[in-house]
Image (cartoon, rainbow, N blue to C red):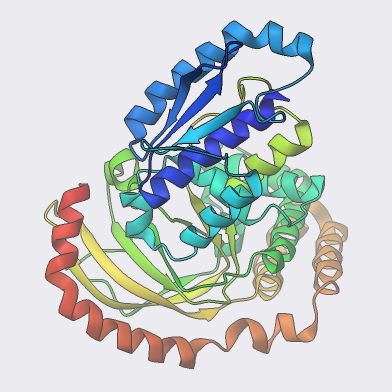
Length: 401
């Protein structure tokens, strides 16, 4: 089907950008003459321009292709040229393996310099985790966090319910209608995190209102922590937000980190919504990476040329969502009883205990918190490196502001 071909040229374009190559895609006409129908290139602007040419070609020939019940991709009616010679097409499997091999070696700056778009980054995430199964309930929970209950979930976990007033919601409605759903989402996201354990050290980026020149040595997050893997968001979004500075968080291998773009990818697959021209499969993405509750140690900070405070930090302790939920329910006990009665309190407690039963004692206790010593040692080594590279980092920051 044409959807497969769209998938192929998307992967081919990503491959060219990551490996700094350019291919012309050729097709033989009825007389055996080769004609260029698409260019996959390492330059994003050129890729989009040629991509439009390809779409026009497909639209002009769609009816004939449908009648023939075949596609260019399935019948290998095309070849690739690197500018010097024609070569057999790379298979989808070969493209995926090459993309993931290269991507596994890339840090945040490499990703930004590669010129891959947010859409293409999402496609890489889809390739990376295509073998991980997410149920419809999993997808729903992640979607609710991303698009609907973000402030309620994190507000509850932090013990800050100002979101109730901001949304002009009554406390009674919040307790009765939202609390069960919030707890369910937290439990399911905590369960999903087991599937997404980082396989390499990485640096993720976060804006935090607490990042300023008077910042202390440690930041605590009792909530899920939204970060980005792409520094280019400074230009597109983050740098336009007033207040606070930017935190570059060193995340060690083995840390639970959910790539939130996987939600859209899994939805696309489950809804079978990729049509001939890829309709419905575009739009702005955030390269969001969702970390679990944690403590972060600030290793150093400096002022960027634009006046923003930048801080380098490392995760030193992972926290447990179940313990935090239990603590918050006790803190909210009087409020819950007032608006929902003792029965509602017991119902919510039982809901948390049911979630707790799905985790082993190791997952709830030692394994989730005892990373401090090892990470602190890594942090000290990195601090020394950062201090030596600080002027370079400032120059790099100026180039993306």
